[in-house]
Length: 323
Image 1 (cartoon, rainbow, N blue to C red):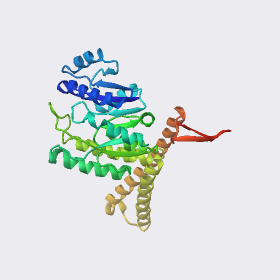
Image 2 (cartoon, helix red, strand yellow; image 1 turned 30 degrees about the vertical axis):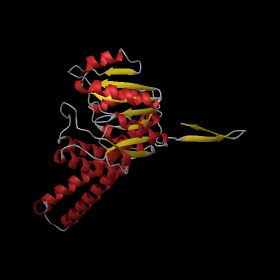
Image 3 (tube, rainbow, N blue to C red; image 1 turned 30 degrees about the horizontal axis):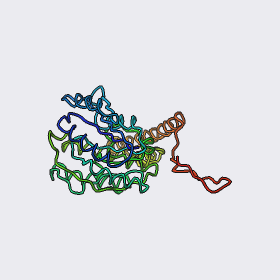
Image 4 (tube, helix red, strand yellow; image 1 turned 90 degrees about the vertical axis):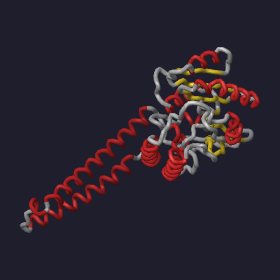
């Protein structure tokens, strides 16, 4: 079964054309499917149109959020309600072509866990969208080790079990492949069409680039130090205490030789004290982080690994079961 998750916010002109094209594509796949529209507190007639559509189509479900929580939250709500073994996320503004869905499913059928869309020929403004996007994608690939050329597009297909290991918050929906790589997900990139927005204006601007940079730092930390925060904070703590301790020892020796360190080395003494104190704080933060991680995993009975499958041998032949 295929679940199509579409977050919408004030997309009234696009809903009916998108729905018609989706139905045309999905009916030709000859697979069971469902369509989940997540209305992120639209203020136009989007909710009314969706309410009318859901009355005529048993394959459709509409999830209305109480207020505008943002795209990540809307996607998370759709993922939670999706029943399909394969979940496809796409935007509701017609910049993603439903006709590309078979290409994404083809990669999933080949054995990949995530088929990520790649806007090979972008139609966005070169200065405000293309250049910042290329820089962000390059940084994200370096930070995560997942070599995608387009992290930003929502248009992706996932195996449902991959999404169960991912908890979304903030604006991390665009980095699901990187987060899933922590659990060994296999990711493929599929060229998709990128069309001009049919109507309305984009919800994104150049200011989002700075937020993306902060997200990249978050992802880097989560992927490398999530289960071992002491390795990150401990390294900073060791550097700070070593430098601060060295400065203070040097000043102590100078003091023993009768030098007035307050007068002659006042700024150096302050710097040494701050380094020493900062290093001790980093050590403390690392220890607290380690205890929080242990509490997190043990209280929720979560594992720091993900099993792809378990093979067993029975009396006759071999059997395998996927988890």
